[in-house]
Image (tube, rainbow, N blue to C red):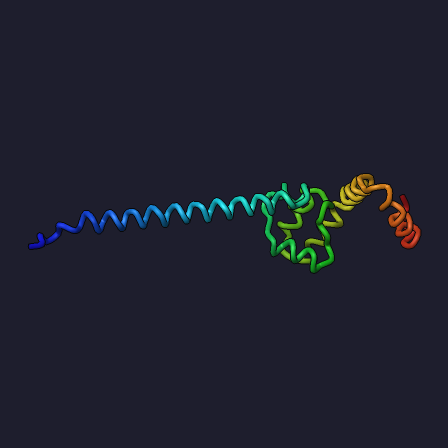
Length: 131
């Protein structure tokens, strides 16, 4: 004859084992996500990696407005671009940081491989940029 409630310990043991397995799977999943996110962040250039509050949607807004941010400008400018609430305000940010952006561009040009420099010389001649 079965005693009522005698199987409760066995049932609870199964539930606890399932819960532990679910928690372990969830922890592994989050660890994998964390590693993937860290790998993604490491792939970004330093100026973007250091941004105070990075919003992919705002980077997209910058790109749609013709404002590139890959390697140039410096983090301080990208922070200001992230804070700007409209394209017009982003253009004002660019105007405000004009000298810094030019300096950042020149620094990046110096980092180019010698084989890439003829393209810049041609661009400079085409657009009449002063150097």
